[in-house]
Length: 291
Image (cartoon, rainbow, N blue to C red):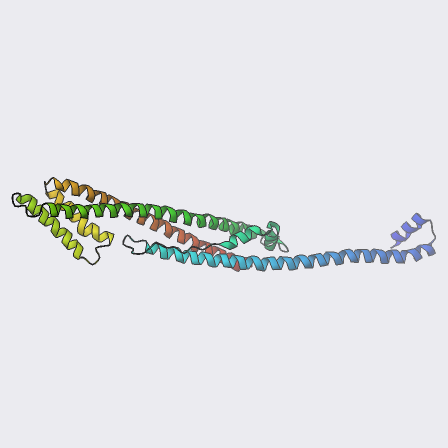
């Protein structure tokens, strides 16, 4: 106070009485000025606090929805993986989640996202919070990657399965047509006992196969039609067996490819399901710990 009084006397070249008269308004002015600054800072802090809390609530809801989508995708992938069977009699349909909230996260301001983790308590468990912040967005990036990978896997599997299935069906169809033609053209043959015996065995195989109520299933066609004819041809020296064997081998090769495709993608979709389960669990823990 004395310093300010002396400063005013020196600046304005006035006595003690005048200095005291001026000092009081100056002090009041300075106090009002400082109070104004502090009030504006307080208002700004309140606005920032409200904005931060609103952003935090919004991000929490978004992360909860993404976590729920991960759980749904996990369940859908498990169900789809279990349905991948070579005799599956329906289309392989997979319900995929859109993960639209990932796009919402992308539209949020990075500084706002950063502040909901670190503002107000930056020096409290800062290393742990930095790790959780990085982990959260790494998980979101992985979800984006695997979301795209699901579509890529589906397209590849569908293309491979349908291509090999068509090849299998074509070969089996040709085989059955050839069997019917050979049986018709050589019916009533008496001067070639070995051929007659071969055709009788062939007709028996086809007849037994057709009696099976599951004759449309791929595994039944392999077990009851393809393999018995292949075994018959291996025992026979008939020329016509060569024609049939080509169709049999083509069908068996296609069957092998179908089976390989089923096993490969069953494993891949199972691994994908485990990834989404892990994502949901990690995001859920982050929400519980930091929101």
